[in-house]
Image 1 (tube, rainbow, N blue to C red):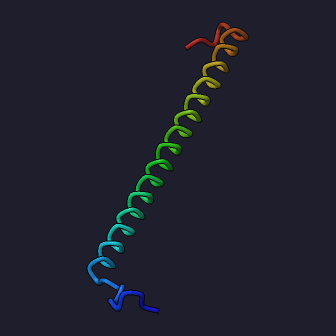
Image 2: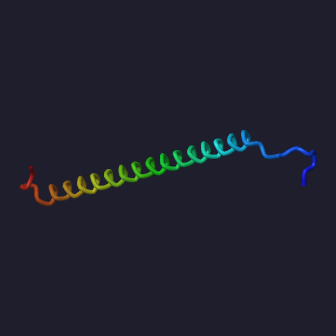
Image 3: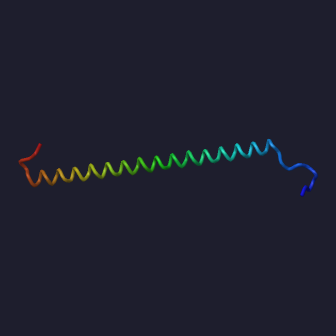
Length: 71
C-alpha cells in the first residue's frame, strides 16, 4: 500500500545501507579476531610463566636434596 504515491525503494539508500551493514560486520569480525588473539597470547604467556616457575621450584628442591649435584 503506497501512502504518497512514490516508490519507497531507493537504490542509492539500499546501497548505502548495505555498505554500512558490511562495514559494521567487518568491524565486529576484526574486533572479535583481535580479542581472540589477545586472549590466546595471554593464556600462552601464563602457561609459560607457570611452567618456568614449576621448573625453577623443582631445581631448588633438587639442589637442596642433593647439594653435590649442583651445576
